[in-house]
Structure formats: C-alpha cells, structure tokens
Image 1 (cartoon, helix red, strand yellow):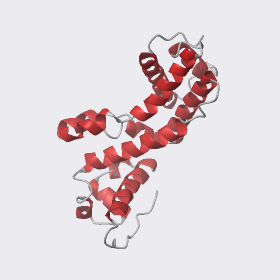
Image 2 (cartoon, rainbow, N blue to C red; image 1 turned 90 degrees about the vertical axis):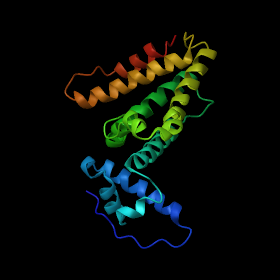
Image 3 (tube, rainbow, N blue to C red; image 1 turned 30 degrees about the vertical axis):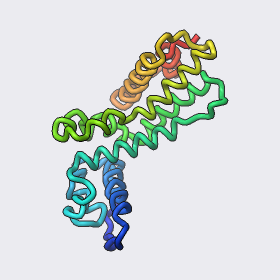
Length: 205
C-alpha cells in the first residue's frame, strides 16, 4: 500500500499542480485496490492535504472520479494508438491486444472506468452538469476502433456495412472477455478466442 505523503504548501499559481496531485492520489488508491479509501478524506490524506483544500478544485467526489476516468481513458487511448500505415487488419488486432493488456495490467482502474468503483449514471443523477463530459467519456478510444474497422472495410478486409455499430459490438466482446477472464480464471479459455472475437465482431473477410 502506498504511504500518504506530507505536502508542502503550494506557491501562488500552482493550483493546477494541486488539482493534478488530487487526481494522482485518487488513482494511486485505485491502483492499490483500496476502494474503501477512495473518499474525499482518503484522497486528501493520500495527497498530503486537508480535505477542505480539495474544494477549490473539485466540488465533490464524483468530479474527482470523473477526472480519474478521463485520465484513465486518455492512457488507454494512447496505448491503443498504432501506425496508420500498418495493415489495417493487423492494426485492428494490435489495438484489441492492447485493450486487453490494459484491462489486465490496470484492473482496478479498468473496473472503475466501467462502473465498479464509480457509477457514472448515478453520478449524472446527482450532478446533471456532468452530462457534456460524460457524453464523450471514452469516445476517443472508441473512435480508434471505429476508424480502424472502417479502414478494414475500405481495404476490402471487412464486410461491415456499419463500422460504428460493429466497432461497438467488438468493444462489447472485448469487454466481456476481459471481465470473464477475471471472474473465471480457471476456465479453459481457448487460446484463439481473442482472434475469434475480433474476426466475428469486426466481420473480417
């Protein structure tokens, strides 16, 4: 478990740094798997600040967790990136592999991104002002799937007539596979299952 630190007082103009450190603290608690401490007090303790010091930067816990989810999806988006000049099918396979690697390597962040430690729908009910930010959460990562599948169609490598719909189906398949591997680690998963999910959901020729 990461030890909370004592933080020196910010100089004038360093408020943005403190905001980032608050998000860092929340992510550290999630990575440690210590979900019970992902509270305003727990985050403040991890960041080495008092709980009231959070409020100039975040009005509540939901806004912190939204910032955590945004950062996590940003990391995922970077890890999904692949050279545009690569064969589109190989690029799509590499993206799917990177997605599952992210889910396996950052399990607590991944679960939070998809509702385990933070329910975005409930947060929206509590804070309707989050609607605009929540509506685009994860869309950068999804767009990589959609664009790459569209490239497969253009190259005559996929029979998809609707890359948006089929990219969404592919995402659902990968997410389900990632979750089931955690829930049933002793199940004899076929070694070619990942490629089969990609082939079927992306309608690869």
